[in-house]
Image 1 (cartoon, rainbow, N blue to C red):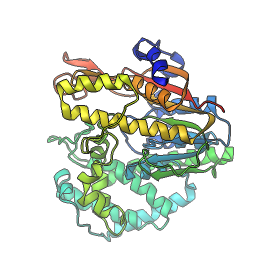
Image 2: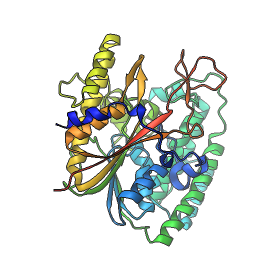
Image 3: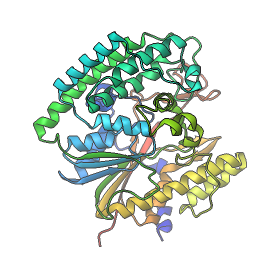
Image 4: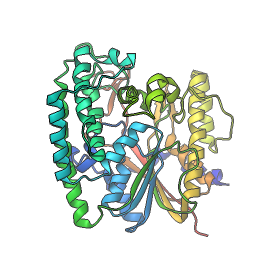
Length: 439
């Protein structure tokens, strides 16, 4: 029944850009305000979208959920607006980042923790870690020794929340200290890279984080929202949620890209470093250091998953899979797996929402091997099939100030305007707003 209704909205590209959702005048400083800049993360949506959805569809005290929590943008904005929030993500690094970003720390406690950190660093009681061999591939030996010293100093911090704050900063700076090409989101060695002193780099970032924590704390203290509940779980969102049915007022999420196991690759430095430490990261130890390949298999749509059968609840998705089969059968199976997983998540979303509850899904279209991947159209069809009813379909223009919009047609790497082989990506994305019908 829902598929028939969806026929009317196949071509999202024909939608007009809604200037009210494009936020063209927002600067990078505004999109990374407060705790939003604590840690790099791929494909973040800007907090202004979340704030707008919260303002339009909720009231103070309502419950907001993000089943693909990522780095916690939805939860931070929910807390700032006095909304209870819960986020899920399968990636433990995402959980670490989000827990840090949603936890305002009294500035005096953070100041004392910094004194502990500096004292421990100067006294250099280094806790040696038996690192995963892959760490030696990414880092020079002298850099590993210095990072060991910094890491040991962090673990000397007595306050658990402050220690997590410092571990988040450490994780953010691993890429800076490694051979990883800074402009690449894929594991790529930069043979010409000059690594700056890791202590100077992390201390500079900690200074910025501390200032933003103080601002965050003061805003929440002033509004009375310091104790507003915000939780994050490490969880596969296709599985059962720790929420009662019909409890959620608003869901805001941006699903991972097709072949989203790349997120695991992007965070492998942190996963491997922390996973090599059985003392401080006991739960991570075997799973993320010795079994990193196995962990990648858990991500939505991963090519490592077994081929699965099932109705995709979208004839747009069926057409995409047929086109991909002509190019690459394994890739077609990846994308089919992704759409099967997304169908499950949309069913979970519908189940969790109150009657009349709203969901805003931020999603973009892309291409794979020359095949247009209409993720927005597929999501709309799958959501209608799950029982949702349309509220609004919004097309927003992405600002080139926020992300690099050009890729090289030959290499696929990000590039600039002066490259004749450039092509534009990430020009638009869509906000699919739907509602669970009232009884």
